[in-house]
Image 1 (cartoon, rainbow, N blue to C red):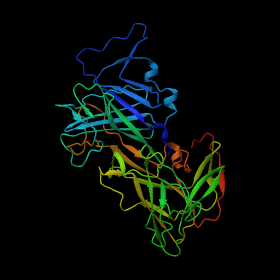
Image 2 (cartoon, rainbow, N blue to C red; image 1 turned 180 degrees about the vertical axis):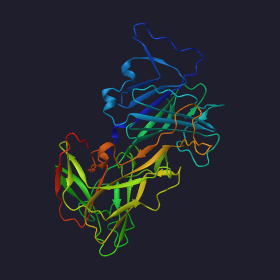
Image 3 (tube, rainbow, N blue to C red; image 1 turned 60 degrees about the horizontal axis):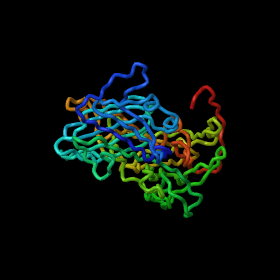
Length: 412
């Protein structure tokens, strides 16, 4: 999943607390409109989304709140922001082109420090927690996570006071980079997906050095094909990992994975994470191609034993995986996965003591999904550069054949 387009998005939430009445009727000729959200680009090319809180409207024109061409080129079109302080939970969600007002953000006493992003199991009553999720409205794929970095355009403090006029969230895009190895023990760049195939017969040490595979040319594009060891006559379990990275965490070496995905909490067991194995496919010239060679339907893949299952647990940035090959495993297959998460705390109206119900009249929490890709491209093979979200795997592979499948009028 390549989401570099939203790196460095600054989400600006402007808080106007003046006592004067700023609501004014529109001009008779409708040349002046009033809105509570303005989209713009700064000199660095970052996208700014300015939210005016507590019902305040500002003059604007249609283009300032519309889905412009520049914004349409980006993958994200949906936002959810949350402020938590004590018993106060202020939440808002909106999509591009909509108004996006939010009320009831706590800033009591000498002000509330919202520098902390992750709402802990045992929250501190005097600490504020704030985060923003950015992604796709259609399938709720999470593409970026932001934290509060500025108050009144200054990064010297993250304390929102009664006199504060604005707060800024800086969003870091999630990033994956699938890369293969041409031969054992040869130098290779980092890869989001790594296995323990080269770890003798134990297959428990996951590393780039132990990752085995090659590249296969499909439609003029080199796709990594990761191989699993020959199981012989007994079931064999091989450990692997899939890591999500923050682009700005280490731009020169995105292989340094994040420790976790900030503010992303697991939804399960109400909605469980899932892994899907499929016949490998790729898109070339608007046409889908499927494998005509043997497809391995025997090898199984599940989440590793260290993957958390408790509702509200922190979503790890590195997802543990376990492959189990059978004595008759042979051929190729692809896999992808999704993990449902929410932004810090969830709204659950059953039982009668809800957790995270908005105190500002805002919407219920959004269920987001952490995925290696998005949309229909989720099931296309990932070559390390496109939007594909599936990894190509092989057991006892000698050669690959591909069958052309026309999809005119059928979609993808």
